[in-house]
Length: 283
Length: 350
Ligand SMILES: Nc1ncnc2c1ncn2[C@@H]1O[C@H](COP(=O)(O)OP(=O)(O)OP(=O)(O)O)[C@@H](O)[C@H]1O
Ligand SMILES: [Mg+2]
Image 1 (tube, rainbow over the protein chains, first blue to last red):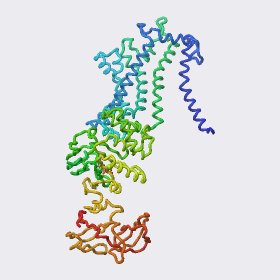
Image 2 (cartoon, protein in one colour; image 1 turned 30 degrees about the vertical axis):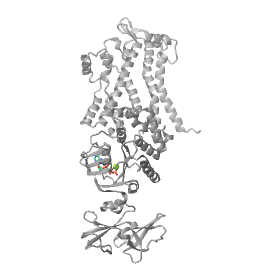
Image 3 (cartoon, rainbow over the protein chains, first blue to last red; image 1 turned 90 degrees about the vertical axis):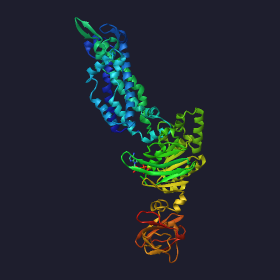
Image 4 (cartoon, chains in turn orange, brown; image 1 turned 45 degrees about the horizontal axis):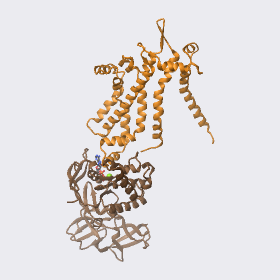
């Protein structure tokens, strides 16, 4: 096989790209296996140290926070629940609202679509006080429902689903109708399977979005029981020394590495669907 | 009472297009009805109203004794084959056929039996596990047919199902559809703009023009006895020749010849229609044709030429007759097989 120069160049560029992505992660991981003092003295490390088990053990099990009650493990679970809830509901709600917009020719469907679209300009951070007021009036502060609910509407996903549904030929709906499918069956038996790659993609994006929420959980939760990973990153693993809070750097690196695991798992798990969708064109 | 009755059915689209005007017709049980007409004449619209995919603006439709105007398409028990087949891309062939049965709550064993029967009938048994994207055009066509047959509906509706196939396959599938319909015996309506397809498939034919049925009858009736110039021009291949003329006291004058004793009391400008196959060569004939072009089809020759002011006049003769470009032919009309139409409105007057 002859390897062309352009191919070699392409590979060099790709390898450089991979290194660019991987090196910081490796640095964090390597650093998480040393003790804090070494890192503070010598900076981030490339080689592995001998503190791996200790650091990770500590991260997962040490009770932190002001009340010394919340563990990192608990925060991972909280974040996971929040991200899962947000991603699942976002996908379901936007797929369904796109279905309504495209297939039910009700009055004002177009203005309603644009209204939904405009909400892209009003992210949660902008409407955070009214949102907080509503959620707290509903008595949902310090609950998973409160963490998830204000974030489940998604203009982006609705838009993508709408664009996709519009490409599905009308005859498909018509022949499904003649085959005795009602609107609900058409959604479940046709739109959902036809858009499964799309659903997987949206789920991944929305999961990562939910997982990385910072401001909302910060405002929403007063009880440490509902703290999330991203909040914890700022708050835990600090040590007081003569009234000054010092970071426990090694543990924090371990914490960062651990915090990456859930989204990575989601991507790894769902990417099979992606690739399937890319290989076999079904339309 | 007929199996399918259309009574003064009218369709006006929301944008104001009047696609079908007060159309009435009856289709008998087991009959193969063909709607034929030029593009945009409202064939599909009429078919889709029967299927329930388009609302009926006015009039009513009865199927098997039931008024179906307001019946949902999913409950009409009709099956439709679309031009682009509309197979379910994410289901394999088996599930494509089985889907309609599942929705009817039929048991798994029965579904399997019915699907296998239909697949055997259509010779698609080998492909049952394949997705539609892995089938050829002809195979997809069969699957679409299978999906219609397997449910054993009250009526089959076909909307130009053969137009995506190549010429050879189209003829083959045409034959198969006809055979299949005779075997299964289900009432069918077939939409096409191809007059050969229409002639060969139909028990009865509805020639549609501008949202109106111009003529309804068996293919032979329509071929022999077209009621209007439109129908005469549309049915028959190659197309009928039309010559301008004048009818006065039963004598027709046209392009340098006269026909006496025309059976019509009409007086005034007319169009004379002569089918290419209704003429033969003689000495001292009525029509003098100077040949411009000869198309040899093997079995037949199509001769195109000029008579006086009329160009591209077509004459059809057996392929055994050798006719050269540039020669002059003398033709007679066989057995008074000619048609006279009122020039002002195209209606037949003889
Ligand atoms: N959804 C619609 N809205 C408005 N007008 C329409 C619509 N569908 C069809 N028409 C119009 O109605 C008329 C009849 O259309 P139809 O599709 O029935 O024609 P057709 O005979 O099936 O033609 P073809 O042979 O090209 O399929 C056309 O003038 C068409 O432009
Ligand atoms: Mg049509």
